[in-house]
Length: 233
View 1: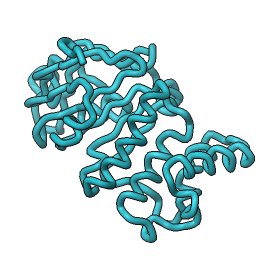
View 2: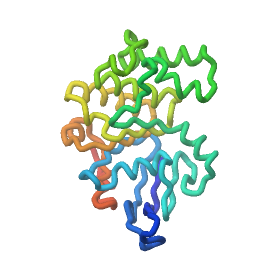
View 3: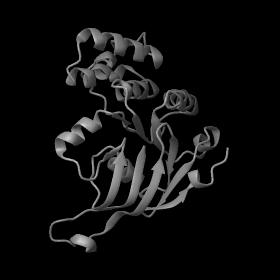
């Protein structure tokens, strides 16, 4: 489950406003996503979508309000607790953020190795995931030897290798053509059907139409629409 309860995010700059006078990036943000739910995060550029995702994967901490992630009060946890919770969250970025000197296999294996999993388990899980995303024949290729769509599929495999309960994606299809975007969405919706909570930020009206799910519409840092309140499909 993901729950925001009157969440605010304010950035305090040296020499600028402080406290409640600092400009609010996010304000009055309240919504709930049940475990296993799917939400589109929509809104104009600069509306606050990426900031909402950063709050969800603990890259930012709220200035005010409460955030519950996977049954835990994320707004008040210590750094070590946050690091442990972050292992249960998979994140995919528009720019992939793959390590250029590593192969597709080693990029996907990295989170497992950092968690000190056995190499036998790494080999089994990574091989299975690369097959799932359709890259079983390209495991040794570096990112610059893969297409944009293939790089994004490596990024998805890396994001889910530790079997996250929450999967977040920030404009994952922004640099892909329609065919590649649809293949990516088949992977993401398949992940959701296996019980993972999914939140995808997008500008694509086509994807929102073709893959129906409730929207969380963000406007000027506030929640303008929560379609889950009226969703009946």
